[in-house]
Structures are given as structure tokens and as C-alpha cells.
Image (cartoon, helix red, strand yellow):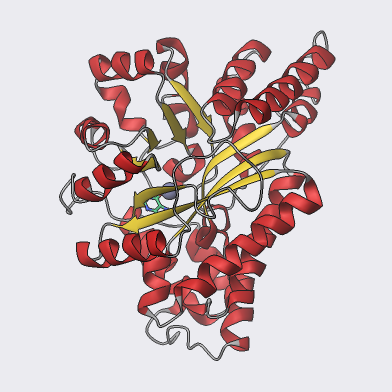
Length: 369
Ligand code: HPA
Ligand code: ZN
């Protein structure tokens, strides 16, 4: 999917080397069909019978089916089926490590990654195996690549509220979910840096996690929420109301200019996933994603992959697709990169390092683009 933007091949090099922050990628969305088949075989997990669901006949048929999602819920049925192959701590570590290796190649310097403990726990996987495995993958990437990482625990809206409440209590009791910390020190920082919510948007009450988010806010825990993906701008308003300080997707905000102006003024970061939006039929093409509208309105956003193994595009592919569709200027990329850094859940020192990296690259490419 990532082709050099047609006008000037230097764009591809520039976008590759631009220090990127990824804020919206689901680790379970990094399970490729080949890793699904490999882990299913290793862990004796039965995938759906191909006689009932032909997509599961082979790696190739599954990959082909991923190119034809009809909606968020159609995608989610494959997403939740695929993740059943994750059974052991080492599986979670391997999955996270596979994502971070690709992210490093794509020029990601800071990654905030989602994970979905509820479904794994429902299959009998101990909470500590899930978190220990993902934390091990994060630490390995930090040591190997010098990147910074953050784990965000997602609540799943299609499951009963009590399941989310139990998970929240477990993470607090384990001492994993703690107030925001600027530190990258392994001992003092939280193992889980924030909460989020995802899965089906239309159907469950918009404010179903209001009490959990209020509790997290009172403890100084970071909070984000998927909103305004399939749901209209009122879902974004509801997420802000129940205490999210960041919005995942948020693209339908563009339908409400008044709310868009408020969000621009507050400086709230939207984690936009343009390829995901097209793959899930939220928009017909990348050029319909409101990138231009957000830039013009001063809405802060980052560009992200969401579920790269399912949508056939890791984060650099998404950057290239945006450049292909919008032909942005270097200064517009500076704004996007800087907003991504400033909206990250890291301390001022790390932000400064990342901003200096962006600045150095832009200086280097001045006159080449
Ligand atoms: N939306 C909602 N839930 C999700 C998504 C998404 O794009 N990806 C993985 N879970
Ligand atoms: Zn998502």
C-alpha cells in the first residue's frame, strides 16, 4: 500500500524518517493471518470450521477476506475470533514485539498501544499473563530501539459493564494502573498508563463507563475513548462529557463545526486512523477523511494504523496514503508531528527530545521537497 508519493521520491524518505508517535494501535489488531494460524496450531486452538466460514480455509483466504470488511462490527467478528489464539504470556510478548519491530522500521519513536484484557480473561487467561507478556514486549522494544512505549487498557462496549468494572478493580489492585507519571523509570512508572474504550459504537449507552472514568479522573489516571468513528459527533461530545481527555478516531466531529471549534480551542488530540476508516466503510476514500478540515480548523490530530494486520497498512503506509491524498506541505507535516508529540502521555523531557528530532529532520529536508 505504501507507494512513494508520486510527485517527488524524497517525500517517501521524509515520511519514513519523520519521528512518529503512534497513539492508536490495538496490539490484538497486529495479529496477522500467518501468526493466527501459527499460534492456533501451537496452542491447539480450533479456528472456525472452513465449511461454515470459508475465510478460515487458509492464510490466503483469511487475508483476502480482510480486504472486504463491510462495517466496524463485521471487522470486529474477525478481530475477536482471531485473538482467541493468544493463550500464554509468551504469545502476548511475541505479538507486541512483532508490532514494535515494524513500528521501528516505520520510524515510530513513541508508541501508545491498546490491549483488550476482558476477552482473554473470559477465555481463562490469567490477568497477570496478559499484562506481564505485553509489558515484556514493551520493555524489549524500549531496550532494542530506544523508543518509549505506553500501554492503554481498553474496555469493550459490547460486553457487560460488570466485566469492565472487575477488570478496572483488578488493574488497580495489582498496582498496574496508576496516576499519570512523566517518569520513564521502570520502578516508579505505571505498567498501564491509561484507560480507553472500544468495540461496537452504536448500540451500547454512550456513557456506559461514566462511573469508571470519573473514578479514574479522581485518581489522575489518563483517559481516552473511541468515539465518532461510526457514531456521529454526539458520541464525541458524550466522551468529553464522561471525562475522556483524548478521542480515538473522532472523524465525524467534522459534521459539527461548533464542537470542532471547541475541541480545537481545548487542544484535545484526536487519534485519526485514515486507512481503517476506509477499510471499515466510514468513508469511500482517504481524501474524504477530514484531514484538511481538521488542519484548517486547528484541530490537533495524529495519524495511526488502528489494526494494521487487518487493514493491510502499518503507520508509515497511513502517512503515505495521507500524503498521496492531500499533498500536504512540510510545514503541515510539522504541525501534525508536533501535535502528536505534545499530545503524548510522556514527560516534558521526552517531548523535547522528540520535538528536536522533528525539527532536525525538517531542517534537513528543506529545499528537497
Ligand atoms: N473501533 C472500535 N473498536 C476497535 C477498533 C476500532 O476501530 N479496532 C479494534 N477495536
Ligand atoms: Zn481503534
